[in-house]
Image (tube, rainbow, N blue to C red; front, side):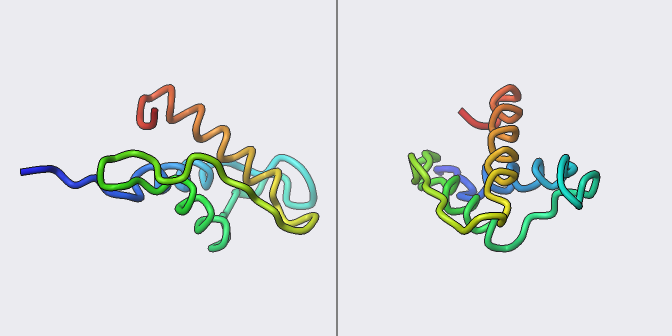
Length: 91
């Protein structure tokens, strides 16, 4: 019997990690980093796995207007990837 891989296992780990962070600048400094639904959808799309446990998306492009949290989102994703790689949850 072949064990099925949860296609959202990595994206869920990234979302959980980011939401443990606190914002470090601006008028919301010190408040928890709560992802909006559109941000969660981007993470789930970029980090979804196929049936073989391989990532479906190799490169992602994020193009949205100014002052909408792009830098914070990408910084959170980068921190999550570095952290999860060190624990070998993602390769």
